[in-house]
Image (cartoon, rainbow, N blue to C red; front, side):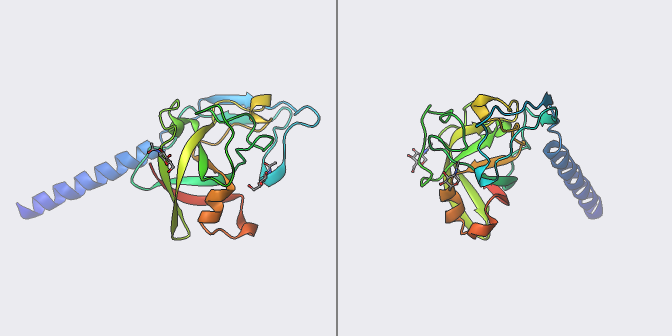
Length: 185
Ligand SMILES: *[C@@H]1O[C@H](CO)[C@@H](O)[C@H](O)[C@H]1NC(C)=O
Ligand SMILES: *[C@@H]1O[C@H](CO)[C@@H](O)[C@H](O)[C@H]1NC(C)=O
């Protein structure tokens, strides 16, 4: 009986793990978007920002990977100031934000149509953690237009963060750009 229970619990565990695993990978692309060449003077390439390329196909997403206790994500660098590479003002409050404050933009699926606006999320990497406020969307559904500074649509697992976040994590300046992190919503 005991071994039967054990077997059942192992099976259950396998089933749950498989389900979680499936959900984490269940975020499928929602479409493709063809890149347009940025008009002259558009698309700021500072801070490793990517510019759309004429004719290139970009994958779009309405969803993001399922959130768990320690959701894996990719940290990127963004300016939330006027004239920065973030494009227009932040979507949550229609304002610009100082890059000296820990603010972030989330991929569309995690942004949840503004439902995560002003939430404070915990970002962990390098054995350090920083709390940052959600103020904007990193749009995974559109891009390559003026509003997005002619940058491609966001990937679905992005936390696009101000320099303040990178500093707080103690990431050496030379390594700024892209970093694997864990998120707690
Ligand atoms: C590049 O990043 C630095 C540090 O956050 C920021 O001061 C600067 O404004 C950014 N440049 C652009 C064009 O966003
Ligand atoms: C998040 O933190 C900021 C700064 O500490 C605070 O002003 C804001 O109210 C917090 N948001 C929530 C939803 O608690």
